[in-house]
Length: 149
Image (tube, rainbow, N blue to C red):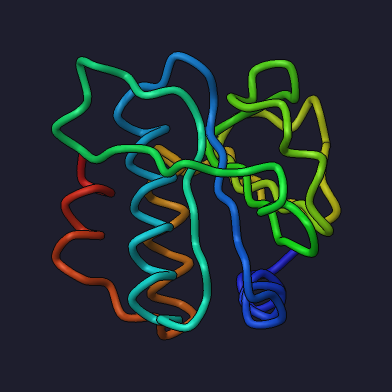
């Protein structure tokens, strides 16, 4: 699994929904929302949404989007920073057309159609940053703020 394969899938879909794990920490939210910011900036004609429960203690980062069941029709779903399916926040992650896992935890639950797992990375945010840099996607100040969190 390479970053270019992930980019090809992103380019192929008009609607992308990004998930992360339950009870999020700054890496879960930072990787999810940082990726949302990168994709919204670089692909302004795509609908890019982030779903999951809001975490009041981390509300300073950003808010989750309102995602309807209908948004999953013909959509690409990306899950960041989540090792196994029971921990994914918002159980609709399987309702999309295609599922990508981007994570830094041991790959004991190899879910998804495409997987990018780097256990040497310090965080999922590091992986998202590398993805943007290696594929030539512009990293905005807001994306950098989210990923740094």
